[in-house]
Image 1 (cartoon, rainbow, N blue to C red):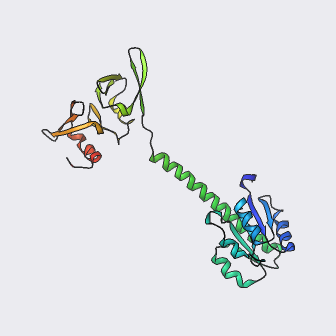
Image 2: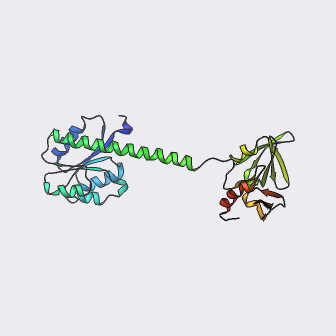
Image 3: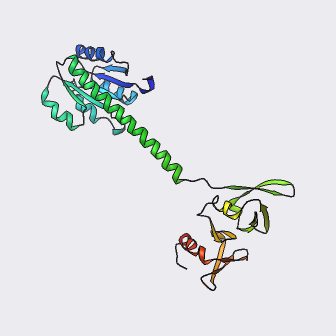
Length: 259
């Protein structure tokens, strides 16, 4: 296990012999990084807030600030996993009420310590894996939820190559293996099919209304019903196009209204 993945542990106990016993056993495991030891609750609060350990071995009874008081001072974001260490078994119920991983009753032996330590390692590793899975799922959802659409078109005209922002496009019509891009009073030929360009444009902004035409939704000025479910589409620049009945449902969905 690399240093980045080792379990960072802090030992908090006002009894030197108890601290030394825990530290000695922790040093036998390469998967732990001991980040410090504290003699009282005040030191513990500062150390936890500063170093954010994964796991603390926490004595219940200490002068001035006891183990439970230490936890009460911590925010949820700073809360490490806890193994309580105490000579008083009456605190066991309360220890598990605050979601302690284990409760070591002094005096405990090496075997009992290793049981608690293995339980802690398994729990911490499981949580790390769950957090990693959540990050991966969030990333995949983000990639799926935010497809990339064209923001600029690369156009050629009179031997020049220039860029046209899709926000400047009013409407598009098919011309064989080309499409004609209309922007204001100008138009440009682009070597692409209208179907190929359609899937590259943001459907929240652009909509195909006919097998040979795509319009920018905000540039539509008026719709007039024709025969057989078709509509005449008048653009803001005065251009008149036809909405085929085959594409009417898509326009209704985009507008949020029935035609």
